[in-house]
Amino acid sequence: PSSLLCRVYGCFSFKNSLGYFLHAVLMDCLVGLPASIADIAGFDCLTPSIFDMKSEFQDGGFKAAFPERFGLDINFAADLNFLRSLGVVDYSVLLSVWQIPEELGLDLSKQDVRPCILVPGTSERPWYLLRLGVIDFLVHWDVRKRTENVLKRTCFHPMHSERVTIMDPDGYARRQLDFLEFVFRSELRK
Image 1 (cartoon, one colour):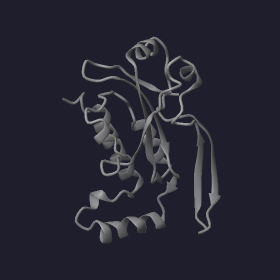
Image 2 (cartoon, helix red, strand yellow; image 1 turned 180 degrees about the horizontal axis):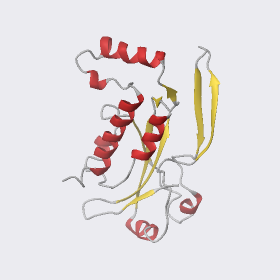
Image 3 (tube, rainbow, N blue to C red; image 1 turned 180 degrees about the vertical axis):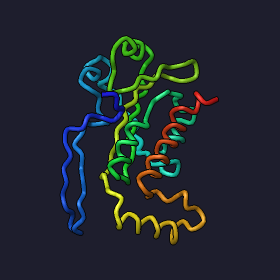
């Protein structure tokens, strides 16, 4: 209930053509709004900006679009520690961002907007509505992923191993958490 990740309706496992098991999660649509918000006048014409964020090296264009960041105190640790405890890697956080008019933001501030997050506007920044969720195949840290890690560190990024996006579940969750805290809490750390 306190998770910032979207509601999960089920997890399905299947073997791909190479014989590897893949796990797919059926979850809420992250680019759409919950009906309680979508029915409010004014939202029918708003389109979100969508960012697929893995790390500081793969942020989906987020830092360029929002250099000021949001400065929110959001706890991502529980969600990412849950994925780490399952031994899962190779996921991204999908972020949908709607820029909303001030009057709509003021209306929404009087109600519960979960699973979305309302970012109040300031004199320098408009109001935003955010929605977060984990996307991608949830892949176990196995021999294949360990091999991928070694090959990428050795062949593709020998001088910059920090750019290798696949790593063990502890490192993956820690890097993802550090990145998300940087993105969302930078103003709070000043």
